[in-house]
Image (cartoon, rainbow, N blue to C red; front, side):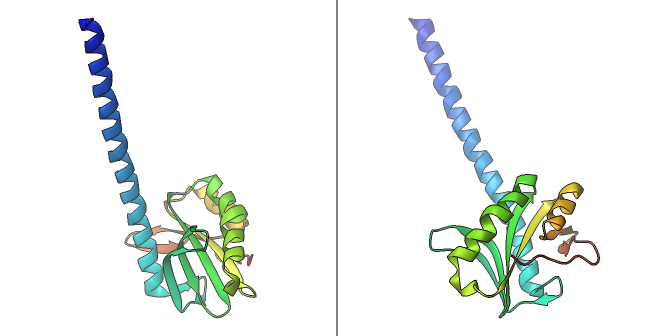
Length: 162
């Protein structure tokens, strides 16, 4: 019985340690995501430009009526850009942008009807082959450049309006 009690106590201690580790990991992941989003937002807010287009508004964490959040949205009278921010961009992020984020944005914001809607993926880590795939899909690519965020598309890139 004494051995059983020690095993149960040890399992409980392990469970508590795992919960604490999970909480710390979640906090760290959220901090990293917030830092990346800060860098992207403040750079876009400062320049109010992307791919030769000028914007009057740069909005962070814009919510639609269903509660879905858009990391950064840039607006002018004729165009909106939906920017999805990731610490490290993965191939499924490109697919999600095309199949979920942009269609949801167009559906949830009727004020964007008649405007050109562009997509942008921003990341501190953006593997080169994903840059090419995002570009082929017509998405702007935003990545780090020292202290600033730079446009990563190649010369002559033409964004796709969705």
